[in-house]
Image (tube, rainbow, N blue to C red):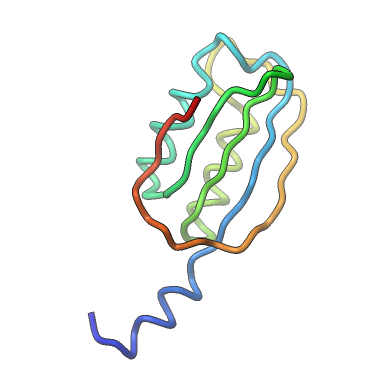
Length: 102
């Protein structure tokens, strides 16, 4: 990679913060999200929250984030997604892949 390409790559990185509510815990939602995010080449994390929601932080291209958003709105078999709150955010460009956190 040439140095001149670096600002363009950083500019293409976007981030989104998702809060998914409904029947989303105990149905494999985190593992569904993990597999989808890794397939899409996203960085970030997914975790269950004490209020029964699932929280996701994802960074990557706009197209990959759009695809993840569509997947989260459907969820895995057995889930019943009631709402997906979405906030755009500034990417940290930290890298590191996508993981389940606790």
